[in-house]
Image (cartoon, rainbow, N blue to C red; front, side, top):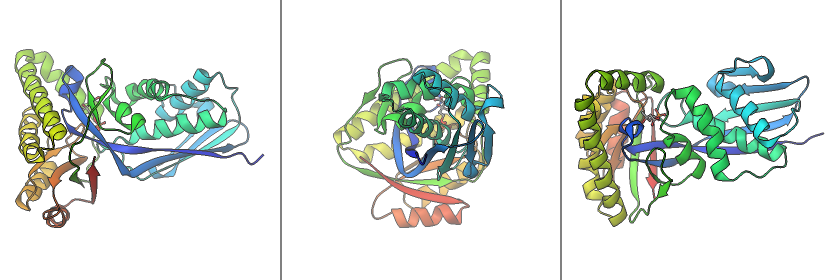
Amino acid sequence: MNKRFSASACGKIILLGEHAVVYGRPAIAVPVTQVRATATVKPGEHGLFIHAADIDRSVAVDSANSNDPLAAIVNLTLAHLSCPRPDLEITIRSTIPIASGLGSGAAVSTAIVRALAQWCSARLDDAEVNALVYEVEKLHHGTPSGIDNTVIVYQQPVYFIRDAAMQTFAVAQPFTVAIGNTGVASSTRITVGDVRTGWEIDRARYEAWFDRIGAIVQQARSAIESGAIDRLGPLMDQNQVLLRDLDVSSVELERLILAAKQAGASGAKLVGGGRGGNMIALVDDRSVAAVTAALKDAGAVNTIVTEIG
Ligand code: PMV
């Protein structure tokens, strides 16, 4: 039998609102389609195996730890589909850097769910895929808000509030973001945990920071919806100040942020969990080349330019 099915999922960035989103404030996330994770399912022998060379993992699903995210998404999906456990080989290829705020874990899970659904001749709607991927996000992140899985599964810009219905919104005028990778792997589970520790010690101070981030996100949404992109850069800068207050920035991130700003970006901030991973800079046709060059000079191991909207 030569049956073989593939599915892929994009990466993502959080434009504004990370961390505060865990505490019920809104955040805006957008898909990054230049990077993708792809899962291919084909017949195997003697059980279920996952090979993920790009993320340096090989997993025998039947004997894996129940906390293993790759094994968990396979087990959850097969159970949800009431699909008999076949002998399968699942190969993952991904161009999304891991542990860097671009949604690698959620994209890999999404690709696996969709490829397995095809294998089992089942149809899953986006809400079902999203619920399955969210379960595994808990293994990656501990207390995820759900923003990563939502933007990746629906592959649309989202205005996300935890436990509320997903909202998409119109991008009145497309805009361009340069993404710079510090090359420093950072665990979102750790930064989210550290923010929680700080919040437990001084709730009033953290809640005030979260409120300010939430207000920035609301203003950013109306700027994007009305095409007032000139208002977006300063809002990104204000968000970065608050992320620094939350202690999730780092020397490497700050170096890239400063370089981007000096090269003409109208706003710049870290994305995702922070303390490493990626930063983003708002650019236009005139500044994009100078900003990406400046990011590389300042130590970015990789840059991606993506258009939103
Ligand atoms: O590091 P990432 O891109 O997975 O983003 C995590 C975003 C946080 O707000 C820090 C956590 C969350 O679950 O929303």
